[in-house]
Image 1 (cartoon, helix red, strand yellow):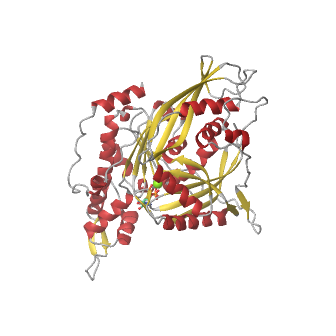
Image 2 (tube, rainbow, N blue to C red):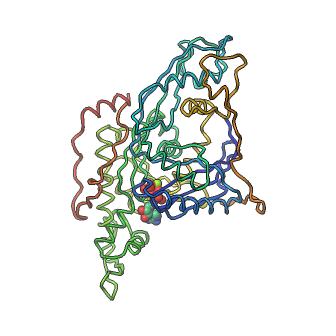
Image 3 (cartoon, rainbow, N blue to C red):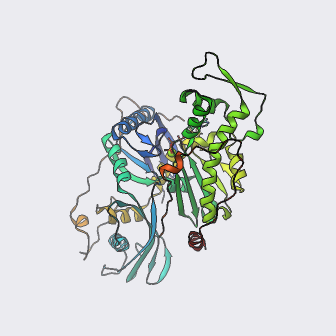
Length: 473
Ligand SMILES: Nc1ncnc2c1ncn2[C@@H]1O[C@H](COP(=O)(O)OP(=O)(O)OP(=O)(O)O)[C@@H](O)[C@H]1O
Ligand SMILES: [Mg+2]
């Protein structure tokens, strides 16, 4: 389906809040507005202060509005993979229409049947992704509407997340004066956006290196098979530099960005860098290699933890290797270090949009792209979750049994997504625990000393391995 229109993506990160306004013309994306505001109120990827987060969202949205020349009303917001779980689902119904031609309502009803399950009170369904339908035994149908049949089955995946994370995200967006269009699982959008068709099909690992956390996601068979969140990120590298060199966080960040390299082997012991050390009148000189060793220690620890988990599910045997993204992946030497540790081909993903050639923007771009890719069948399954009538719902011609009350009675109130600024024209500028989040104790540990050599792979949990191998088959 070719889509046209404007979509806003919002990525609430630990280091910064990113907003993009994307205009899609026949599935071609043009970025017409960008906002990037320093984040407050987010710690290790999780919202911990609603008011501060709201202010940061407003600042980023205002920037994007000014650049795009529009008033943003609704956004598609990303949600991190912390404690994300996925489960296969299936539903089956008898087609209710007298003519036996499958319509919107049948799709909605089969989705509702697939949703029947008990969910713990602290969790909530984020999304249900329909993978295929079967009509009277004929499998592999993407959209059964308009087909004739008496029995309709749906197979898909349900994603659930912690209610508190979903609630806080929604609350922050709403308190910033915006409506939530879609809540989108960020690594799901990212893997769909940055991987090629072959990489998604044959299997690839994506590692999003943020400021407060590192998210590993494995895509295989065009499905998100695994996510893991390690609540350590680029900001921890800065903190390490600050502690080891006894310098402020601001200086440490500047040292990292201006002179940092995660691969000490290629740095020089001759090249000296002046560092403002607390309590010293004159800057102290350190060599480039020493700075690099401090950086390497933390990044190596992050990669090693990811590798242990990926080995346990044999994901590194997938042919796509590893793709890195996120702001922390901008550090020189990160790809080389990753290659050394994962021992598979590694590449860095850099978005190809003018003014956004920074891996930190990969997520927000992916969120907007993903929102565009959601089709009418998805809208119908979403309605089965929310009980709200889908925008695209085609009212059946004959009265139906079992139609949810919300569909028969509710009237849809159409709200414009954007409002043009009067004074401006838009200016075109450039079933298993799915996640294994770390506990606080683990990530608090500083990495081993820079000089320490890389440790070998941990032993593999047989149960998880068998399970995951099965998925991959
Ligand atoms: N040029 C650079 N070199 C090295 N590191 C960089 C560079 N630019 C940004 N970073 C680091 O990238 C990190 C921020 O990345 P990003 O914007 O992807 O994080 P975030 O999405 O805000 O956080 P998270 O995803 O963890 O919630 C910070 O730690 C920052 O120091
Ligand atoms: Mg991020």
